[in-house]
Amino acid sequence: MTIRIRHSDDHRRVASPLPPGHAEPRTPLKFDEPILPKLRAVFLSATEDGLFAANRAMLEWVRGHVTHRFVGTRKAEAIHLIDFDEGASNKFVVSDEVVFVGADTRRYDLVLWINGFPVVVGETKTPLDESRSWLDAAVDIHATYEARTPAFFVANALSFACDGKEFRYGAIGQAPEHWLPWSRTTDPIREPSLGGALRSAALLLRPRLLLDIIQVYTFFIRKATADGALAAKILPRYPQVESVEAIVERAHDQSRSQGLIWHHQGSGKTLLMAFAAAKLRMESSELNAPTIVVVLDRIDLLDQLHAEFRAVGIKDLVVAETGKKLHRVLANGQGGVVVTTVFRFANAGLLTNRSNIVVMVDEAHRTQDGRLGADLKAALPNATRIGLTGTPISQADRDTWNNFGHSGDPGNVLNHYSVERSINDGATLPVHVETRLVDYQIASAITVG
Image (cartoon, rainbow, N blue to C red; front, side, top):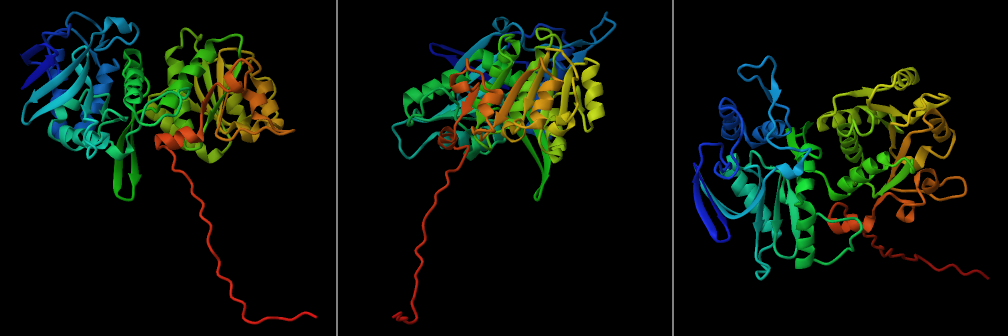
């Protein structure tokens, strides 16, 4: 197999003995030869086992979860293909006109490589042809490139499509109509334009963010449907990433102990909490081995949230179904993630004075104004409290902004994803109300006199 790469005036043909997508002369892998056959096998497995399975296996490699016992050592060591701690030690290269020559030959408009692995593929269309758009570019990637050259997408973190006016990104196997834009919640909502597309690309394709997406914000799901088992790769949306970064920053801030996440309904707040828990656990040493407490207001959500947290890769997860179990877990000072309901805090009293606790309360507008909210505060008086809601309330006896907002945050909100922005992103469908004409017929007149 051959990879042909062109960097503006540099055009070279690289015949690589490494897995497809790895240009050896640029970024050689610096570990013993026994590793290479194993790594090569992952890429080759895309043909037999499918791209989904190969991509999932490769994620374990790049996250450093695969180990190997080298000759002369007593225990297995983790293999690190990417340095997530020191981002600058990695090599980032952007190539255009990349041609893959294998069982099928394909050319990719843009490829972003990290340490020689093709982690991002981009397809572009001209803005001068109104008959073609970003959707055509996304279809090329999804229906043609992934299907005919799956080995090149084994290390893929995400792909993007752009037509010079709009920018969308998606995961392997994701239907193009479900690709979403990338932006910032503080940016103005704008009409499609070249400036907007360039802004989206600059925000999403930052080296540090790409490393975070690979390390934290990616997971795989399998669930049963009417048509059989469904497998999907899940990528984050920009309001989720923003909120996670804000929550982690607030957990580090000793002067501010609470924050309000106000995201429109259906924006993925449960997944947001899972991402935040994973990120907080990765910063365990800086936060003194924190305990993350996720508080729900419905018992039937415990199993669903537990499954999503496990899918993100959180293994030290405890479900506290009873008040006694909640007390025992928090009293012993152990770190990890605790999932419970707000009802377990009823009359609990003081559970712990520790400050290295981050509490995330789902549907915070429902339960935090009365006795249950007071009991939760009394149980964990020094914790960082984060409230998540799609419908904050401000009334005489109920005030979500007062319960979780901080005066130092804009509008007392740590992060806000509005309904207008959600509709503009295509994440929410607008509701149109149309009046209906009722045709009344009077059978006979009645004279009152």
